[in-house]
Length: 99
Image (tube, rainbow, N blue to C red):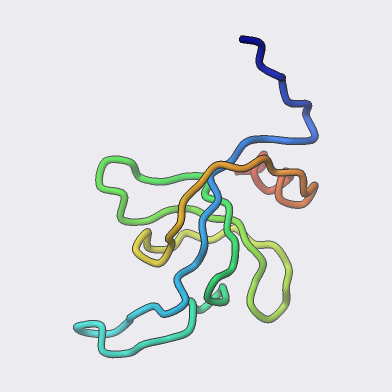
């Protein structure tokens, strides 16, 4: 079986969605649409995690207001639907290489 090698303009990455509703506060009483930085349902690229306990992950995604790509560490419980995809976006690839 022959596998295709990817060029330098594309990389494989874990992609997830930000949960539509995220609970915050003591006991999870406050319910918000998405997180402070990302809209609910937004695609984020998971580029790092603390795999022992996996409490938080480092993600790249578009900010909910400015729509600029940013790198943020957030709780792993706020992401869902984790899958692998090829990344083609030059901005995301640059942020991945910086990290």
